[in-house]
Amino acid sequence: MLLDLDDSQLVLVDYQSRLMPSIHEGEQVIRNAMRLARVAQLLEVPVWGTEENPDRLGPNPPELKALCQRTFAKTSFSAVADGFAELLRPPARPQGGNARSLPKHLQKPQQSGPEPRNTIVIAGCEAHVCLLQTSLDLLEDEFEVWVVTDACSSRSERNRDAAFDRLAGAGAELVTTEMVAFEWLRSCDHPAFREVLDLVK
Image (cartoon, rainbow, N blue to C red; front, side, top):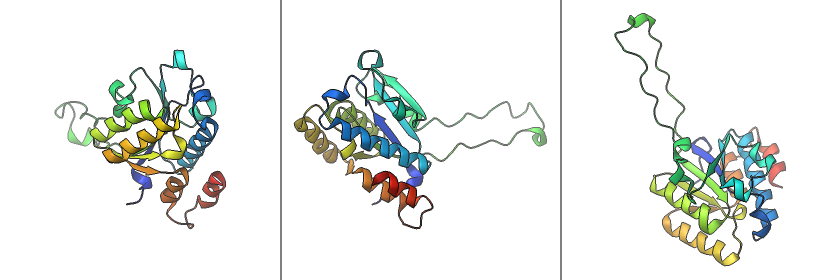
């Protein structure tokens, strides 16, 4: 099973200024998060960010936030517990107006929203806390979850690796930044192939 570009959304969890200096391989992790976000933007994949208690842990890097449609502030370790899934799968729009209020020829046609995107490509910190809990809740909400391992970390390798083991056991797919990029492209014939290649090199 390969990632489907048209069904994907990218979620970047808590790359915050006061947290990242203590994260194992933190600089490389942020570089990969930036690559993911730039590739997603090129390929028109929605990008979302989260920040855990930003007043205390600081914001995500401004260049990362600029690539996100929205950065969601939270206090729960799982963003889903604070309502994040509603951004990823917005409720259907209610029918507007009373059908008898206007003659049929004057009623506006109902606009259907965009097709839901049920595949969540997710990366972030700390892998064994906020990333893990958000991912497990997304799986519980029947999203497909793909964890980008080289854009995730914790303060220790042991905690990071334990998170990956648990996520794989729960049904998440474990991938890397390049795997995501090339599965979204599928072919060197894709119009954005050269630009994506430059980003992942």
